[in-house]
Length: 391
Image 1 (cartoon, helix red, strand yellow):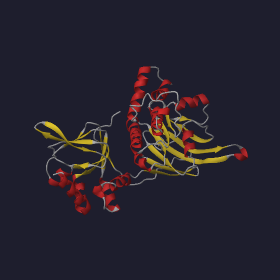
Image 2 (tube, helix red, strand yellow):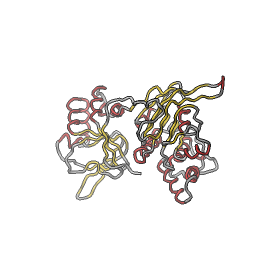
Image 3 (tube, rainbow, N blue to C red):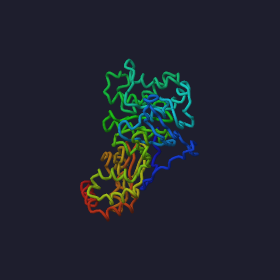
Image 4 (cartoon, rainbow, N blue to C red):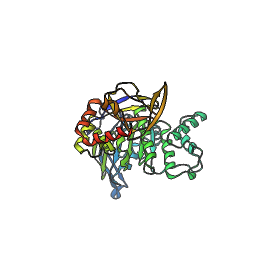
């Protein structure tokens, strides 16, 4: 999988409530991965029956990442398991990848689940199998080439930071490593729908970020739809929408305000410390997003500068041409920035910046960058400090 070089997506400042489907039981004419309408569910029977889901409506489009939040016991996991065909639909309309789930027999449900990847809090790994063997089990349902299955399993484990642990059994892995094996098992078949229940709960910050970045690649490049239940505030920025469930009811379904996500990131950068919320929002409204694959020259020495960059995710190196040879003079990581010198001095770029990992940047155009300088003494002063240090 590769991220398209220099694809740019404007940040959208507005927050919009997603329009719910009509209650006639028919999905709108759109490319939906999941359509839920009037879904109810109860545990128990007769007088002992306890209703846990009430007349819920939800749409998931192809390639969309939706995060579901809400208090414990609100019905999130029950809804997830119904969509995944792990429970029998009692009342309501539920379609997954265009197929009605209500009324399917056990064999038909098994067939429907083949296009779904499940990530649950319980790892459910086989103790007698290695990490690679646990992952390979997902492929054995549909494939027969052992060499290819092993290669794909190892590739997925490596992408999740377990390249040195592929032959380890679960008892020799930490809780976070076992969780990543379970995630690799869910993703190795490249399913069209991924259902995840607290996928990052047992992971540290970096491992959690690696997981959600991989999920985002699946969504962007393979149009995989992802529904994720989580209480992890560190990964909310990955969501296209956030759904909130309370007492068995979906009470809100909101398109993520991209400008608010950008503001939260900017607030953590030293350059923007001291800015008021309104000033931050004004900057965020002007920010665009660029994604560059590993090895891409984001800016080149000698070219005229027209953009200022902040690294949101990823890494890059700064190269200076010395007698025809590119010499590395600095390494850049998340929250580092570049491109300001050419804009402030009205000179050509004095270095090349090349990505060393697939990276995502927040970008301000020349005029917007100048406007920030003109309106923020804090920003201006911090830039002066950096320019002095870079002499």
